[in-house]
Image (cartoon, each protein chain N blue to C red):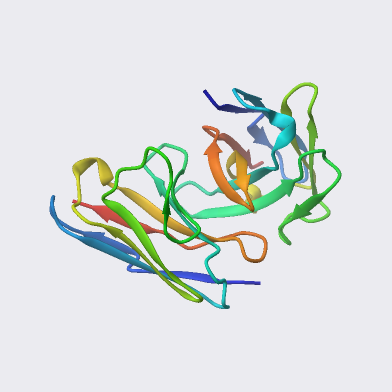
Length: 118
Length: 105
């Protein structure tokens, strides 16, 4: 069974940093592109970033470019999202998702909540 | 950037009703469109990929159609467990989600 389990969310002050993790199991993690998608509670889904299977290629939404870094450790079956210079607008539930093919998100984690507030 | 719109933003229907949601892209995305279902407090779930292909294990009452800029998602006979918000998502150029359609009974 495919499982994606996010962790690392929490309360952080504006301007702070946080690193999210997504532990994957039940599939060949190293073979798939992975994504982060976020959702402000009660609002819609917003794509954040993606990384290719070997970690050599990354893409970001304009809203996080230069502040967030996506990475992966295929030996540990884990996806990461390093977030810097956080603002209140980054407050959201962050989901990791497995890319079935061509940015079709076939499996999602349960999400981890990031709250940016003083 | 490709923008996605959905209509309606919400709807209320009865059990057994046929429900239709439309999704429009700001540019031609050929067939590069997916549909997801999100129940309250849960992660999204892929229902339809490539505009019209049913994901494995998804009930056949769900269907999708369309190409280019105009797409349709249909529930042929609404069931109580279908209460959710439905999102379209283009992947012709990066990824963009529509704003969602909330379906109530």
